[in-house]
Amino acid sequence: MTLQDFMAFHPPGLLSTGEGLRDTNIAATINASGEAFACFFQAPATGNIQKIWIRTNTVASSETIRGGLQGVDASGNPDGTWMNSGNGFVDVSVSTSGTWQQFDLTTNKVAVTYGTTEAFVVFEAGPSWVSGDIDFARPQKLFFHGAAGLPYNAEDTGAGWPGSTKTQEGACLVLEYDDGKCYFIQNWWAGEHLGSGGSVALDGTPGAAGLKFELLSEIAIDGIILSMEFNNDDFKLIHYTSAQNPGGGTDLIATSWDGDVEGKDNDAGKYFKFDSPLTLAAGVHRITVKPDSTGSPHVVVNQIAVDQTQFKGALGIPHSALTNWAWTQENGASWADTADRLPDGVLCVTQVHDGAGGGAGTDSVLGGGNLNGGFAA
Image 1 (tube, rainbow, N blue to C red):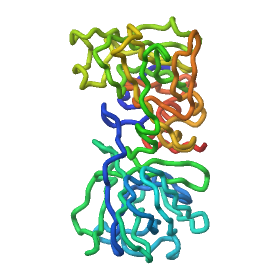
Image 2: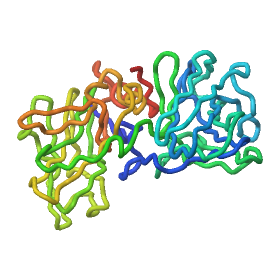
Image 3: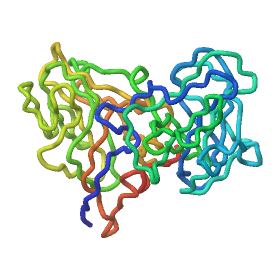
Image 4: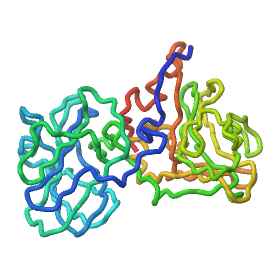
């Protein structure tokens, strides 16, 4: 029953850079009949894909998008044939910017096999397209862990699919299976960012805020990444166990604005490296930001709004711990938790339990043992 080296971000789908994943950049634009956008991926699980979720960026006018799954030709492009005997698509009227769009294939579910690269998600202009642009959103500043350069995007601007020009820009894309499990396509973000989550000023009401989380097994972390605005105010990062109220806890980092901040490059940095790894037992914990004063200027912490419980699971948060992954803030002498909000940040994991002696291993700690998550709501 020991800790073994295991480097990872957790939750894995939430963040890929210290700045967070923005969903305001454009993955592709459809603005005429004959144009299309496709996302190529390895199937995250064996089963039947029932729904496809994709997030818009800017929608100039209401139009119908046809979306579904196609096979792949020898050049690595969509083969033009909808899967499930040509029925694996649905037409959806898209009219709202910055929203999740659901393509419901319940009556035409598509069977896929884990790890295969046989399926494109394809979105194309519907047969009655009139005018206007529809942009699909993509996360900003991604990095990828997928094998063989997966996932990637392809775009048909009316002249056919490219034979070699493909991009690894990603998309805000979630696959939902008929067993209720949702999967974000590796490092393609499955939540909403600022605007729906917003920013919270730690000016005394609340006086501190951060992440409440539950571990199903012992781990060690050596830092945390948070999207914050510092505003020249001194603050502390404090760790609390489940039994500790505001005012207790253990200081992880105490900052001063003379530049003596471990792992932080003035107000451009969001990565806080601890002086030594912090071992966390199984159970509920909190890590919060607490300014040294409540006056202005003050520290601001950014939130993510999680659309649905399913998506929280898709971010890699174990299903049995879903209710204990939440935004938490100081509310007088107690804590107030908000289940549909998360701080824009991740834990930097350096060790996980090896499972010896009957304890849980990485499967129970880090999203089912893979970076795809896949936990039912």
